[in-house]
Length: 180
Image (cartoon, rainbow, N blue to C red; front, top):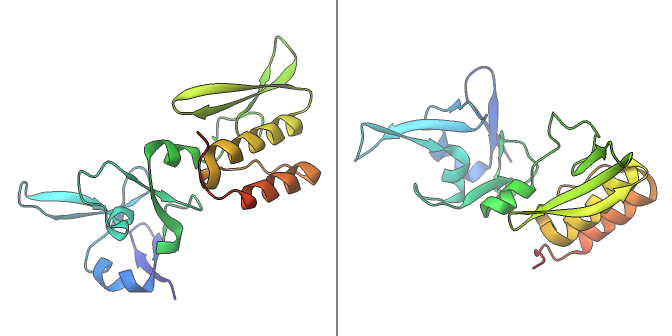
């Protein structure tokens, strides 16, 4: 049964039962990015900062790997919601930007052509996926590429109808591995 740990400002972080006792010994607060953080004594300095999700995942200070919140909620630090990943994989599991004007990840309107263009990132490069008449078609194209390239880290656009059903089916049938 998950438990909650107060982090100040009325917020609470959800943690797995097996982590509660060890984590509740610390005083936690939210950092500027919205992650639970605590100051602890250090041999090198008077204090050092630790992040709750990294402690739960067992990553030591200096470990360059990332801890991804599968559901995107930084306040959900249950073990089943955390996974160790690379920086690229962590970046793939990012929700739609607030600055996005199309309403779909990877989709933007291209004024010269009067069409919706689709782009996705893989291995540090941006890949152009084409132009589409309708934003929903473009979102579907992004979803297909995201499943193929990003596997279990793919964040899919919520496209209705047949597009959405086929994207979700493909997402669940991929083995979670990433394409080359």
